[in-house]
Structure formats: structure tokens, C-alpha cells
Length: 329
Ligand code: TRP
Image (cartoon, rainbow, N blue to C red; front, side):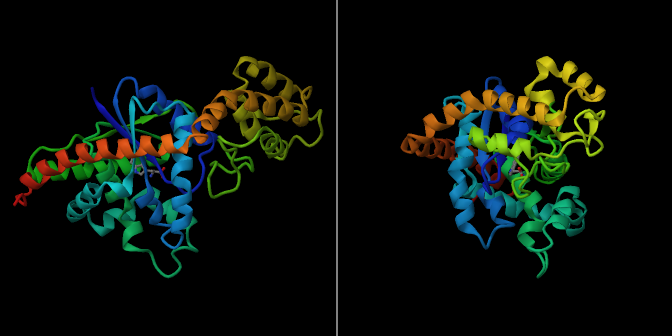
């Protein structure tokens, strides 16, 4: 069986963008791959170092969201990044293989730095700039061949492949060059029309949101700005609500599109129907979440066991690495 690894930063609960972009995909893949799911607390601290309680508080929320989406602890290994010191060790060795200029060119890092000006107003930290190296170590500590992620992570994988290639060339073959497995679901826009639904953007529907909250959020969502009155013709292609309808009301999407365009369907009715569909869709997922949340002792046990298993796997890779690097004393 091939190995996959993926993870999430515990900086907040996960939303429906994560659900369709990544969680459902990994729950499907767990049947065909040896699957590692990492709660990336070390990475979360690279831009939240001043906020350790936030990271700590969200670790189990992220675990619950994964379990809710159907990640099966019998199949997938769920673990916490900070509890695998081998990842940190490999990060140090990898950092010799990457230039500062290469990190500064990483498109994901560039985009994030532009969004996080406030956090880095005193200067960009070594830890944040280097997080692509640490992410390569997350993946390669488990010798993962593939990584199910959203499109925005492709530059991270590009960099991981470069590092693997360079390491293998200098010290000998240890690492595969990991490929992304992209979800076939298009990226969900934010409720505010922003191109991205984001934990930190205040424009998300969370997996654990209660029905009344979901309804309230959807009723306040942005739609096509050119459709001012009910009977104005709408433009589904630019409407975030239509983007959600494509996922949650796929069985009547042709009708929604037609009646929106013709002006028969007003935004209020369209949103009401969407809210119902989202609530219905999330119901079994939320039920599973609540079931696990009632027994946090069990959830913690899942993570302890997963972390133990992940650590054993990591130690195996690291003994190979130390030997190849001639530091196996
Ligand atoms: N960078 C990912 C995110 O922001 C989280 C992550 C950390 C990750 N390490 C990873 C994803 C390794 C895939 C593989 O969501």
C-alpha cells in the first residue's frame, strides 16, 4: 500500500471549504492508502507564536472535524505534529538544502506574508519563512508518496519534491517525490464573495455550525451584485451562493441556474432552499461529531495511539536518514 499524509493547522474549527476540498477526499482515500493525518500545531505556531492557547484549544476541534467527516481511526493514523520530534530533526537537516531566495520565491509563502503584514510588522521570522521546509519534513518523515490537499498547497509540494530529490542525490535514495492528490471539487468562495473561504476571514460555514447559525449566515451571504430586485436576471457564475448550490443541491442545479437567470428565482428563496440543503447535508456529519465529542476520553486515546504509531514510523525513516548522512553514532 502506498502512503499518504495530510494535515491541518489547528487555528480554528474547520469549515465546509475544508470538508469538500480535503476532508471527504481523505476519508475516501483511507481505504486505499496507508493514511496519516497530522494536526499541524508546530506549523500553526509559525504565525501564532504569541497565541499558544488558541492553537492548543483547536487541536481537538480539528481532530473532531476529521472524525466527523468520516476519517476512521481504525484505518487512518491521527497524530499531533509537535509530539513527533523526528519531524523537527529532519527539518534541520533539510534546511541545508534550501536557499533563502528559494523560500522567498515560494508563492504560498508570498501570498500569506501579504495577508499577514500585521503579524510580521517587526520583520519576517526565520520560522515562518522556513515553514515549507518543515512541511516537506512532515511529509517525508513518513516517506509519503502522495498528499491530498487543496490547490493552494501545490507550491509546498513542489518544494518538497525538490528537497527529496536533492537529499537523494547527495546522501542516497531515501525519499519518494510526493505528488498532490487534488480534490475534484472547485474551491468554495467565502460568504462575503471573497475568493477563499478562510478560518481567519470571518466568511465561513463551519462543519459544526448549528442549523440556525447556518441559516443566518447564508441569508446574509453576498450574491450577484447585479441582481438587485427579485426579478432581475442573475449571473450564477459570479454568485457564491450558486457555487454552494452546485454542491448541496446538485440534483436541481439546472433548474436553479435557469430560474435565477430568467429572474423567476429570487435570492431570498434561493438562499432559503440552500440553507435547508446544507443543514440536511451536514446532519449526519454533525451527529458523528457530537457522538465523538461526548466521549473526549476516547478521542484523546485515538490521538495517543495514533501519535505512538506515527512516532514508530518516523523513527524508522530517521535511522535510515542518519545512516545515509553518516551521523549514526
Ligand atoms: N499547510 C497546510 C495548511 O495550511 C497544513 C499542513 C502542514 C500540511 N503540514 C502538512 C498539509 C503536510 C499537507 C501535508 O492547511
